[in-house]
Image 1 (cartoon, rainbow, N blue to C red):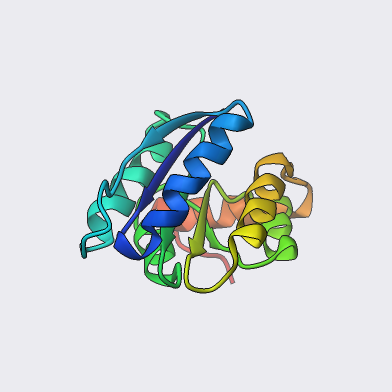
Image 2 (image 1 turned 60 degrees about the vertical axis):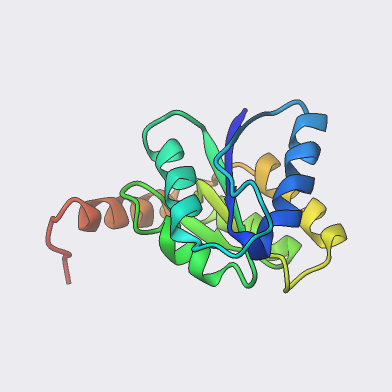
Length: 151
């Protein structure tokens, strides 16, 4: 699978380490930076990582920051992106099973790298359940397209 990655300075270390993890698992990586631990603004790096998923250049994306919150918010500004902020095995699994997330956000200051390794593997391996959850994703897509929501 081709995976786009991006981070700001606060997620730099985990981005570098997860790139190596992804490669060891046989995935292709599209690295959108940042390429230095110097302070920088997260939208500059996260939005291009998310756009790569939205335009089909990558199948999924993983973004990193200090908390992961701003990164998830930035990624979710890109049409077609469903970015999930995950901090545990369960949040990673459910973000795929129920929400069909296509971008994963992780806060480097929030979880250990041991947990990150598990989150990434679970998120990559877990399929979307479809069924009743597919209708909910379709509702999000309709809203994003400007179609009024039904009561």
